[in-house]
Amino acid sequence: MEQGEALPDRELESYLAALSPEGDPESTGSGRRFGGSQVYQLRMSLMANEQLREIAAHNQTSPLALAQEWVMQRLEWEAQQLNNRRWPTASPDNQY
Image 1 (cartoon, one colour):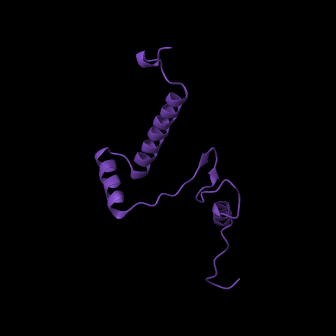
Image 2 (cartoon, rainbow, N blue to C red; image 1 turned 90 degrees about the vertical axis):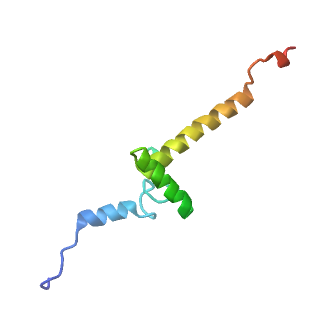
Image 3 (cartoon, one colour; image 1 turned 90 degrees about the horizontal axis):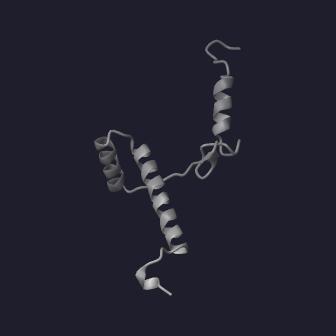
């Protein structure tokens, strides 16, 4: 080995191979599984991104954590709306 030539970093190579989209299905590539989760990329306008950053800073959290919280809240709301449409509650107007 010549002087100044670095030894290969097997740990780094292994880590990068695990992140490779062509590698393990548990990667961080967009739309790919990662453990029990799915990874998505979200493209936002610069103005929306700045708003997200400001609101996150005001709430003392990260933009990512805030966006995840909002998505989870919206999914819960959508599921409730879907459930309400399937099983409408009895109202005086719906009397038989």
